[in-house]
Image (cartoon, rainbow, N blue to C red):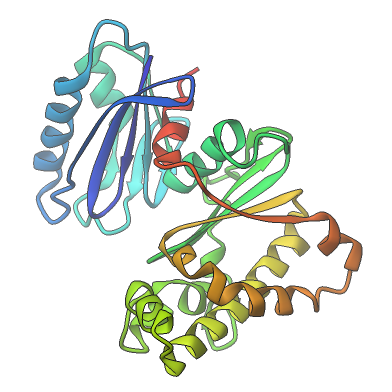
Length: 274
């Protein structure tokens, strides 16, 4: 058994995982605006409350840039005090078992490849559409992180007058004075403005997927994040944008799938333990 941990600016999610199944789960606030050591002590307390003698390691997925080799959270998104936090060293000294740390989107991709929608593919890109927009990349069954552990930060690619994150994530809805959930609820009631917002974001997401096809040419693109609540609203314009991709055979052979398994990022974090 392993402990998988997912950390973002809102919550810490911990679970005891075996064979892709979660046997015990714990969710607690991250306390993201507290000083670094208060957050770390909180994490240690949470791990202490669920660890047992059968645990052979801890895998952690944390938002932002991560030094995978050293197990350091370099710059955690939405956790201001977490700069260059040596999670691996701290937790291995505390618990005396191996600790592995990676970006949370990479853990999402790892979980999908081995326990989710990507099990029949060796090359996938898992796209998160949320407050941020990023990708976890699996090439020939292995995570690809890049030379500086920053591969997959495709939300930062220039697009129109800004970048993809500005047009394909929650920021698109926020600057239109709503959220993805509220826009979904309004669209379900027939609100024309909300429906048009989903159509517009779908066109941008389709262009982002085209960029992924140009750069990685995966067998499948798996969508996750809270924007997929509106998939049935944005998918028509997404596929319309994708239809403009110049290599038609690529479009025909590439699957676009939705994440289905709950807590797949936490499961993927646990799978980091080898």
